[in-house]
Amino acid sequence: MKIAKRFLITLIVCLSVILLAGLLSFFISRPWYYRLFYPWDRYTGTVTVEVDGKPAVFSVEGTSILRPVRTARQGGSRARVSMHAGSYGIYRFRLHVEGLEQPIEFSSLKWNWKVIQYEVLVSIDREEGSVSVTGTVRETNDQGVFFERPIHETGSLEEESLSFPISW
Image: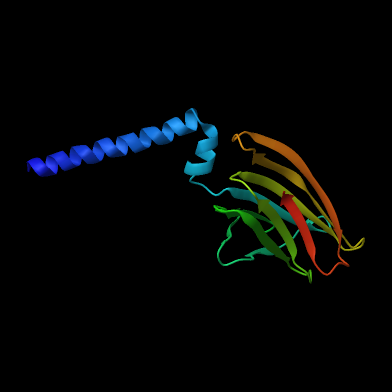
């Protein structure tokens, strides 16, 4: 009985120290928190697609088995796309828009432990044969501080593949 009681007390003390270290790293050393203890997806955002000014149905596909993409529908023309992004490299996902032959690919190069949050609107104009990607990206720097920048990219439906960077 004494051994079980000592084990339980030791376990509670160890868990308390680990919890305290995690909280201190968040409040005192924010960069360490974003590098070591960040438990959520580091690459998260919403994508909305319009074709000729009307909401369009689309599907999302990840491009690597090792880096799975999670999606959650927020309506027919809007989806939340996220990846854990726990290592360095290029992260990609593709949109397959109903009625469009080529997929639209989005990519991001992760060279540090940054967190990327984005909101993107893909507007496809079939008469002009153009694709416009607009929105905002929030990402952290090496100190864990978020900064925001706009996205405004254009492409042509005549191209074989449409690829747009979200973050470099």
